[in-house]
Amino acid sequence: MNGFLISIGKKRTLWVSCSMLILSIYMIGFYSYYVIKYLPTYDLIFLKVDAALETIKLILFSILLKYIYKGKIWAKQALMATLIFDIFISLKQIATTLSLSSDFSKINKINLLSSIFIYCLAILHFNFSKNFNVFTEHQNSI
Image (tube, rainbow, N blue to C red; front, side, top):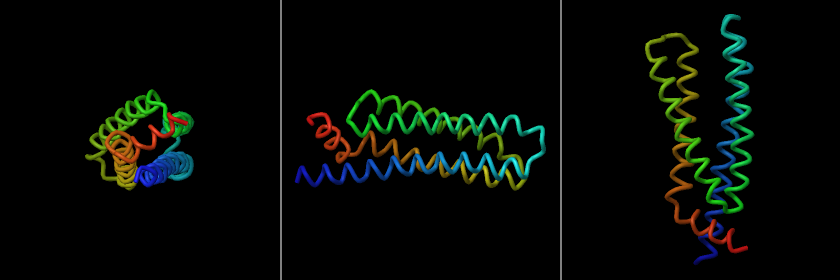
């Protein structure tokens, strides 16, 4: 039974990690292609900053997820703090764009809501999953 929980924890950890990394790569592509194509030039400076921040977040997530896979508790706590902060930032951006009716704001809201959904799944998995706890105990014992 314990081996089954370890394998389920490993698979779900890889699934959540891959979904977070794919979301970050998608957001970099979104900022690079769609937003630069459809927005005026004075907004490009802010969008380049957003693309750079998404790139930094991708690098940070990949490093933290590597250490989480190895069973490091400090990496899990750092990732949780980063995810909660990012969820609050996304909620703030949604709240500020609610009054806008442009197409960009609708597409941006969909991206932000999908990131909130995936980050909430990651928080639930890394904090409350019995499978993940058994998997990290197994990784620490190796």
